[in-house]
Length: 196
Image 1 (cartoon, rainbow, N blue to C red):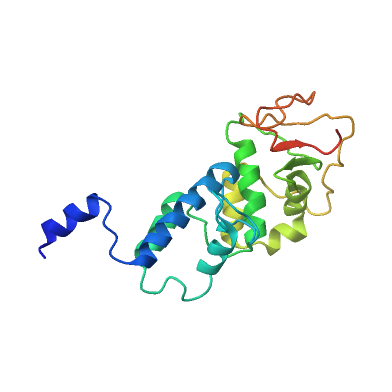
Image 2: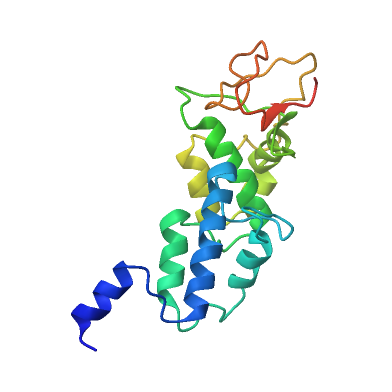
């Protein structure tokens, strides 16, 4: 069969290998997960579109899992360049939530302990990352992605701010979280204060 005919059949949805078809089906579920969680570093128990997307992505991160399928890795990277980070997936999940919360911020915003997103206390996580001893233990790439968000380490010996009580937050989130320091809720409910 000539290349032109192959291209026509592929445009019509022809699947040459069952593994490729399954990959595409799981990739659609992974896209749905990414749309809600802003990362492909899903916990192993995560599901999307009735598929075990967390376990599937975890399996693909194993050494050699994508051997012979560079197009699969390319497809995953097109959605999330950090789908398989050199650091723990849990770190990436927290980072992705903080990145989304700060996406439209102008100037410095504070994500304080007690601000949660998808059940994670991202404020507590961020305060920990900014501690001098933790910051120096991060990889250069981790520090770089945090710095791109305007996050810098605390000076040595300085403690992070305590968790505020009473629903006061120092951030305005992109469509899904606190919008002012008075604690008004956003639209999606994924992000909230622990003090409520």
